[in-house]
Length: 129
Image 1 (tube, rainbow, N blue to C red):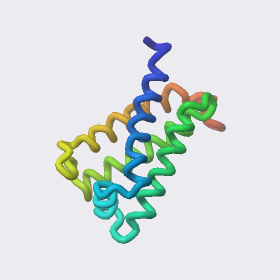
Image 2: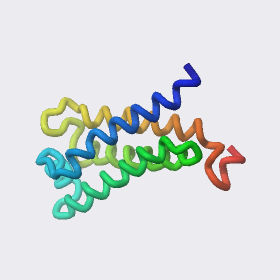
Image 3: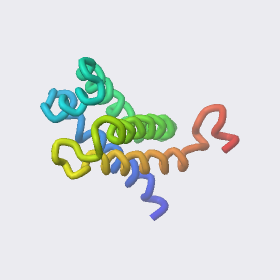
Image 4: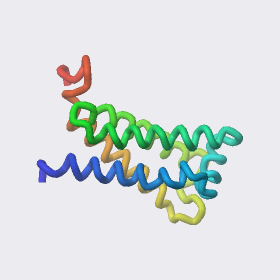
């Protein structure tokens, strides 16, 4: 199982992040509503910017010597998503039963574990960890 854990974590994190890109990039109403709660009139910039960063994080997770960077980006993005849910959006959004919130937690945990597993690759500090 140890051999397959990193790929499973990468797939889980990437699939969750990538599945939301369609909604972010096409301007789906539920995505607009969510980001309007977070950013007000800057909704489009935050929605598209977040989507671009999630796409970059998903790609980096699968580049062997850059997995750590994708994991850091994933943890940061999902930490922001969780804080957004806890402070502005609410755990449940648009009648989803907390699904987005739970997906953010799962992705954060996957990213954190990947970061721990790849800590030796982090420049400058990796050799000390």
